[in-house]
Image 1 (cartoon, rainbow, N blue to C red):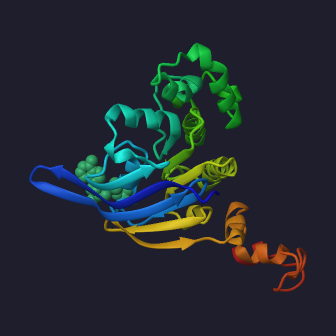
Image 2: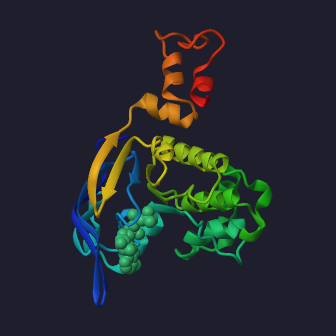
Image 3: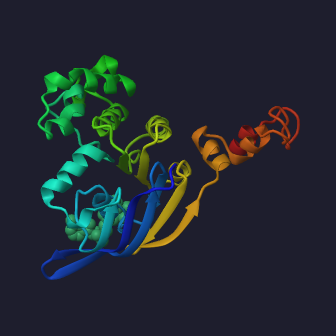
Length: 273
Ligand SMILES: Nc1ncnc2c1ncn2[C@@H]1O[C@H](COP(=O)(O)OP(=O)(O)OP(=O)(O)O)[C@@H](O)[C@H]1O
Ligand SMILES: [Mg+2]
């Protein structure tokens, strides 16, 4: 993680104007996010997480406040400039996959490049390699209906990478998946983070948020509080084990085969029982 801020937002508000009713979705948000960091956004339903993520991804504009992305003032940009930034720097993953039903796996991965005017014939190999990276090399011709939910989300992960983005934004990417399949998607996000990308994930699941370095809790359209995770806590979350197990394998601790609960009992078993 570098010291450089990739995201700087100040006094950001978002009001949805529905005519008679105005919905104040963001009420003054100030956040800096460092390049290469892994951040989770949590908070109750309606607290403004998706609204914030969509603005961070240049899919929407704030009503007021400033947004600098990679040092550039994004709030002042035209729609065309915003769409170029989205196309070149940002990857998106959504809870409901958002794949195009008529397109096969490779074609779905290609979609962001299509919007940049790049023909699939010139980038087929690149898209197929990304399909292979997410474990779908034997499903290239399948359409979304012919894939499981986890496979569809893997297509979405591959699609989010097709522009080699600096930043990947994921809105409840495991929300529709069982825990094992969700774990596979999270492992892919861990890899993207290890590659140096900035990851911002919205989640309701504290276990998912444990994998991030920093958790921003939203409430009523503002940042309520933040937590920073230690490396041991994150490693424990990634390996699916408890912090206790991690402590057991640290040098100078009790050692891998010795449990504080007595011979023959591992930390994991103790946690599960
Ligand atoms: N397009 C829209 N038009 C009007 N109001 C909206 C729109 N999108 C969101 N809102 C409102 O803005 C508020 C914040 O919504 P947002 O979708 O950001 O919440 P969230 O934290 O992502 O919730 P959830 O956890 O349920 O996904 C809510 O009160 C919501 O009803
Ligand atoms: Mg949401």
